Length: 215
Ligand SMILES: [Zn+2]
Image 1 (cartoon, protein in one colour):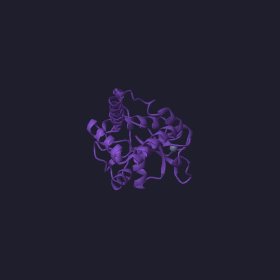
Image 2 (image 1 turned 135 degrees about the horizontal axis):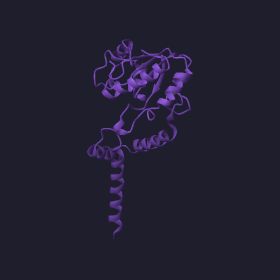
Image 3 (image 1 turned 90 degrees about the horizontal axis):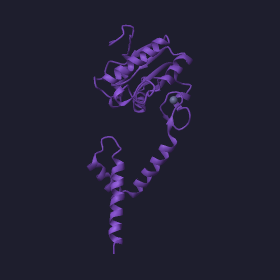
């Protein structure tokens, strides 16, 4: 006689668990998560199965490129392997989404390094977390003529760019910072290709010799 109650409770608990899991997505609150969970179960069970399998596969297979730190399935990503890229330029970005945005602008043909974040001491994100030891290895092992700092135009993005520029200067490398066309507080990922192309072509050298607060 309790079997039915138990069944109902189990169903609810799986549904709750699904909604809770969906809340790991950015910008998804309890209401939206519940709506998504109900939608998947009510209207699109095939889609839900595909989603589940894709999530398992991606989390198992996708890892960081040994050279540029972006996401890839092999040890080195296709961009790093391509002989058609200009190996004298290295563009430093915060996220794989920023890398894709720059690629889609078509304004840059060099190599990349993806920090997977920006400096944020409060969150415990320092030079090591941003892969700067790996970046520094590349500075000394490869023959770059220019390091293009394409971190976001935010306080954290600027601080990150300044740190990487100092590292580049230590290795005798020229560092430039994208500036024009990117709005202050702008997240690179959301900027259109034309604006991004202008920002890249209008980059300036960054000076770290004056110490604190270089502009
Ligand atoms: Zn790579």
